[in-house]
Image 1 (cartoon, rainbow, N blue to C red):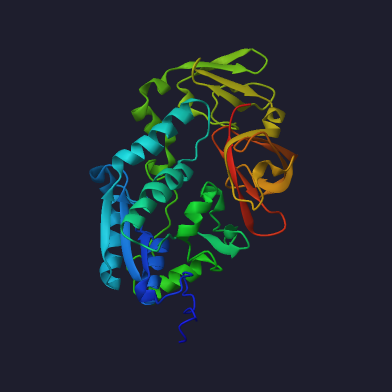
Image 2 (cartoon, rainbow, N blue to C red; image 1 turned 90 degrees about the vertical axis):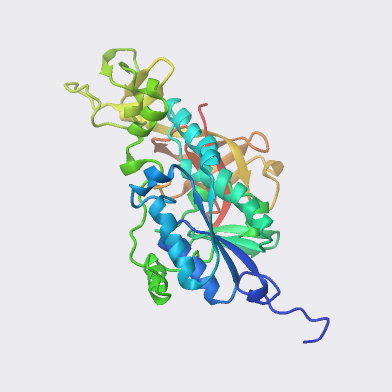
Length: 380
């Protein structure tokens, strides 16, 4: 090769041989991150697997199917042994509690509907773990998330996964441009989860048929109330259920047992109109209910915005985009009106029901797969 000619880029985008490229793989013990690690090891990269212990190891051993539990740490270690690369377990229990679990509890008690998986990516995996990867002199860090990183005119861009059913962009909107330069998502281009499992079988991984985790890792069986009750016992104090017009309708046994938009199980039967939870007030221990049309929202105040567009966020009076206000909803047409570099009012062209403080509002290019970042919905 001539001296003035650079070597071709490898699959991770570096102009050097895979063997000379160190990549830290964040391994949860599930099939996705395991396949990423195995795939890169087979390609000849200098792979280092890292698994985070995020909460009490003894309690975790008893719970299957949760990210980073004790059994999952064991599974990650077995994958590393199978593929022949080093694997480390880091105790992030205190960091995780301070950065994710405590805010989850406080946010829930404040009447919000928190999304702790986003905070975990933002404050733990893509912050502390990413810095650890740099300390290990890695060229990049790879994860098993279903999202794509593409190189554009202004640098790295975030794009939705090829498989819309697996796309995790809602949970990764707060990834900063600097983090995006260092991160890699090798599964984002795959057509389906079946392709991932086929690769796991090809590599002979013990997790090839392991079920996907459905719960928040520290919330067994989706039972938010029991977790909040342990963290914040006062949240189980009884209070009043009142109509939005001020009528007292009944009593409840703790605001933690209710969510915005809930209709069933309110304990106020016998009324002519169907009623929904429209507000939770933890300070007064009040659950406010009202008709369904009170859930429809057109104007959404958003803050802590992470902007991933090429032009500065405040360079325009408005941005015409598509937004997701819940992870399970498809993007819907909207107009962003910037208030500052990190705050905006989002105007939904079609009102959405059940928009709740504490959830994310994620911005999408309506003409492509690109994600322009997003922010956190708060009380107006």
